[in-house]
Image 1 (cartoon, helix red, strand yellow):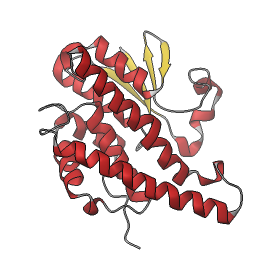
Image 2: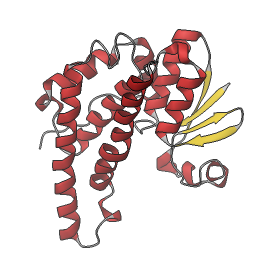
Image 3: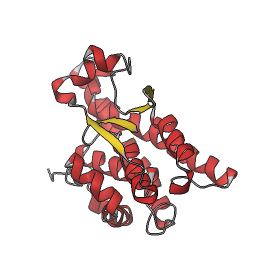
Length: 218
């Protein structure tokens, strides 16, 4: 059985949803392991032995730890191709992985610059500039995802949710922390709210106890 180490609201929501889709499509179960980041559980020796980066997600495959979102998602898809988490046709699959990698290596780090500003600048003035620029850049990235969402069916790739839908939800939710009102991205918000009603996504949301509720009007 696969084991997933996840933290509520983190990017580990992406494989979390994927594994719920696998369960619904194939009956294959997985073991979810909650990591409490606020209590520093990701810095404990036993966790660092699995992932020296001290980050979630970690996927245990036959007891062997795997980290990094794209590698984890690719592995889940290859282990359970019948779940349809990524397109089967080679070029379409490559394009899908390209989109997923962009979410992970461009949009995600942009939010990190807003959320952990002290990693990127020392003075208060410099940190304020980093935060301001990161929020503006994040807005641009979310607008690009909104354009992709307009071309989506009920979900990113047809009728079943998958990795892209989970990351789209996560990034829009994070945008709320950075002062981006989901209502200002109406097509994106409508798509995400539709995806959230899917049973596999709803199951992951319930386990993590997260909602699209991070934006607070100033």
